[in-house]
Image (cartoon, rainbow over all chains, first blue to last red; front, side, top):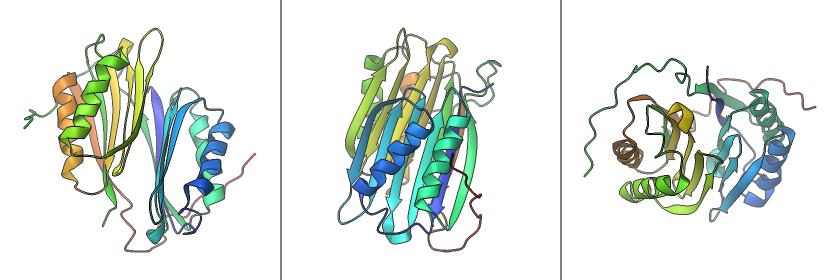
Length: 130
Length: 130
């Protein structure tokens, strides 16, 4: 069992102008949330100067986030959803269809996979806080 | 090269009361941001009913996010930073020291690793948007 799935994708070769401007990215990510039938609680989009943007959207089903590096044509994207696992795929495919990257590094992780096992698999390191 | 590092951690066996209440979690994550010398742009913390919380913090260096499942003693945590890679470790260690999980599933990913290579490694799938 898992509590949710997380798509972790780095999109390369994306149009520099498109990912320079938070105002151009806003409708893409909001559209993805709508297509995926996800429930937005809040969102923050931020414009970097002279170019580049970041956004985080808190969802009832977890979150979506992105960060752009226009000078590299790069968007790093996370879509994490609990509930219907297809929602993340739908949102991701919509974003990719609009950003049109030349290539994508894609991972999908299951989160919280040990909630039913209740097994201590990895002990945390001893932590020293300065 | 990478543009940033992302810690992806699932924390098991965390005290149910502590992770039920967004007000108890707020100082832990804000403290982690301060300890990691990260720059907060905005934050959203959300209280689920009857219990459970989510939070996303947009950082100048990327973002921090968490989601809790008190009934499972579970916190899923992401800390993604560009800039000083130790910042994520410092923030993570601080959070773990206060949440005191029984066990942790931990991954650290490098993001945007191909920005200097400019190689098309993985082609995106053909995308059909309904």
